[in-house]
Image (cartoon, rainbow, N blue to C red; front, side):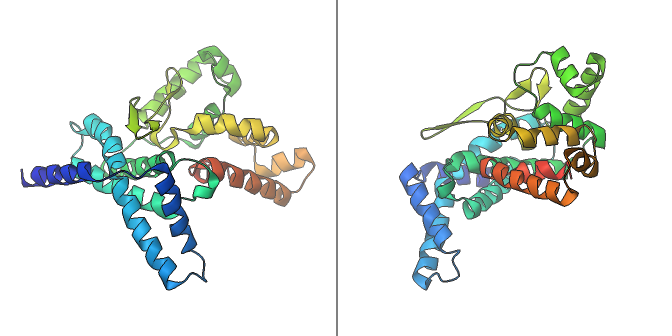
Length: 279
């Protein structure tokens, strides 16, 4: 009861905190980034510390909004308390504040939501044993993430190079390996976030790649040649085999993938983890 009272008091306090405007978010982000400069003055570093503290407080409601649906789903099967998820989500928010760069152009709430979800997901995974996917199942799930949108079950199976029956088995394994995805919109000021979407029913995306379909679509338009390489790697070809067929060295292929990785990281911070699966 004492823990619940403490959590309720914390939630009440968060509800009274002001939310920063988009202009303030950009200003605070710039102040924080300015302190990264080795030549930053003591005044700049103090301003960055104040901006960091204010930016965290102004976005704690985002942590609450994201943590609530996760807790609703796991409270009957997990020993985790709501306060545990709030603490994990706050750690994710702090990380987002530290890494956010307003010069890249995306909204802070969209950026921070990824870090908050990651922190909460890891807290859940740390408290529960989960079913692990084989390397092939992980590769096939990765390729499915990059599939053109709107494919039917049979079309997706053909894209993956498997029989429809095998795709159904893969989907069952994918679903069993992850916490159920959530499809509730969240309102934060002028921004609307989604905790998750479906990739192509009944294929659910994992919590750590909820925005991957949008990332893939944007990246596919900008770098079709890199997507072709990712497809081949996802099908199980080694980097040496892909490089040889392209008439380039493996080192040259690695440089090309690194350039693609940098592009992807500008779109979504989960991209490095995504590319690491293909290494």
